[in-house]
Structures are given as C-alpha cells and as structure tokens.
Image 1: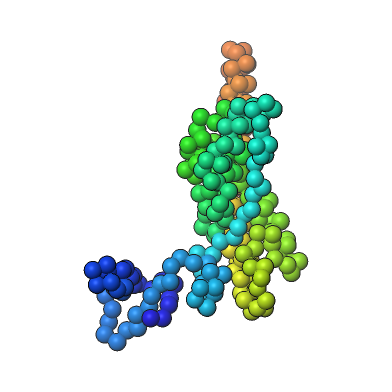
Image 2 (image 1 turned 135 degrees about the vertical axis):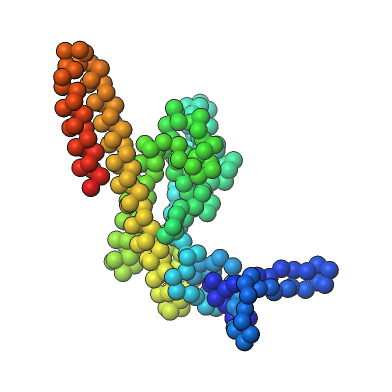
Length: 249
C-alpha cells in the first residue's frame, strides 16, 4: 500500500490469525486508491526507515539540546536543599530526553526542563505542574520563552550562514547530499515557524508582566497617597489605561 501522511487507514495484529490486518477509517469509493500512514515520523526517520519524505511534514521537530544540570555537582555539603531537590527531579523523571520544538508547540520534557531551571524557591511547591508541562507563573514562562526565542534566533542565524544549526537532526554519518539538503530544509522550515510562534508568546508574556507590575505599582501609589491625594486617583487610572492600550497595539 502506498503511503500518504494523512492516509485514512490503520492496521493491527490479529493474534488469533497471526496476521496483520489493514482497515479503513472512512468510506472509500469503488476504485479509489487506499493509502496507509507510516506513523508520525519526521523527515530523517521517514527516509531512514522507508526511503521517502513528504512536504510540510507536521511531525518534523527541531532538537533543543540542554546542558545537564550541575552534577552531583550540587552536593549536600555545598548546595541548598532547594537546588538539590530541583536537580534530582531531572534524574528521577529523565527530563533530558526528547527535548525538541515543533511549529505547533514544545515537547513536554522541554517545557518541564526549562520551567524547572528557571523555577524560584517560592515556586517550587508547584513543581508537579512544571513536570506535566503546565505553566507555574508568568515570570517563569517569561524566562522560558525568552530562552527559546534567543535559541531560535541564534539557530536561524547559523542557517543563514549556509550551515546547519547546532540542534539540527542531520545525521553526522550521512554522505548523501540530497538527503542532507532535504533534512536541512525541513529543519529550517520547522525552526522558522516555531520562531514566529515563540516570539508571539514571548511578546504576550512581556505585556502581561508589564501590566502586572504596573498595576501593583499604581495600587501601592494610591495606598501611600492617602486621603489627600484622592483627587489624583482618576488621573492615575487613566494614565494606567493609556499604558495598557499602548502595549496592546
């Protein structure tokens, strides 16, 4: 059966008959060609295992290598209990595997690893949310997406200099120029689309944090002003709204 990335068929193994069975997941017209989807594989793995690639493969991803946390580097004698507990989470949950970004999102392990790295001691009680890939605070996410934004920008600069990025999925042992160019093009395409999405998220977080800090500062100013400055509150509120409208444009 020929392959198509959106092929609407499936297959399973029938233990009683000791045979693979192929089945359709939609109605086919008589004489219509049936296609099979060969798993959710990126360009390199499709070429490696099946000998072909598909355009705009949504399964393509771009690796984001992260250095391991300070080894056993953090000892009970020299490190804080917070740092020790945080680094142990990396080991216990094997977080340094499957670190990649796609045009539609980041891998759960990548988000968990970055959120743990930028986590403060006061945020540590929410570490389970971080492990599940969930946000723990706007400040934490600001650091995460600032890191990703800078990483994507740096990798794209490497591609613009006609060389692959440091996280490229191009196999080192490959000597096939056509294969290398195909994978390179797929990597760059994923990275460019991911970069646009990451930058958009980063800008939103900048706005949210600005509004949060501005709100706190204005409320503090109002409280410190006392009854003698009540006539200024309306002007302060309007200035605050103007700032929010400015950063939202």
